[in-house]
Image 1 (tube, one colour):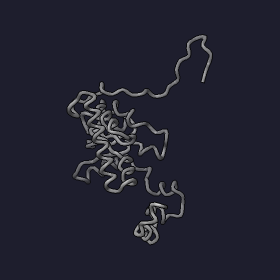
Image 2: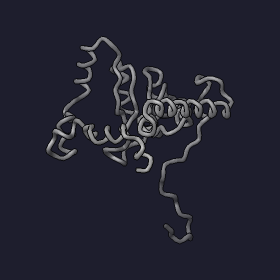
Image 3: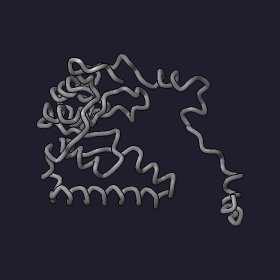
Length: 206
């Protein structure tokens, strides 16, 4: 408030501008879940996708792939690229982690289509690791929003600059000069949580 007091233009803008709102929600009287039910059609099939592809002369990219079988089927259909994504985990927080799926999907279909990665990219090192494991490129859904909220357009530019610097620094530390030099051996990652066998005679612990 102290910072705002000597800035009358901020107060005028604050008091006269319509509050920010989600345009898709302010005209909806039901719950968010009910709105989503009206937005997504659960009856859509691979056959419907094939029809869309037949109508569209350009490239087709399918986002939201979460298993190897679907990736393989889309490759057989001639889809140009897939985006491994659980949409930020907002709808189902136990959805498959795209980064964990990436190596197997890249091995299965990487020779037939581009594989892109979405969800969980929080640093330039994440971008480098994804490319090393077979992603053509990654999408970034949060970093630029943080920059936008903090500093508007300049904040977005700064967020992109930070990511670029992190990518360059990570590659230098790995000793590679181009993205093409990256390969799975450059990546180490934590394994999934799994039950560890207890040696005989050792009491159970949490």
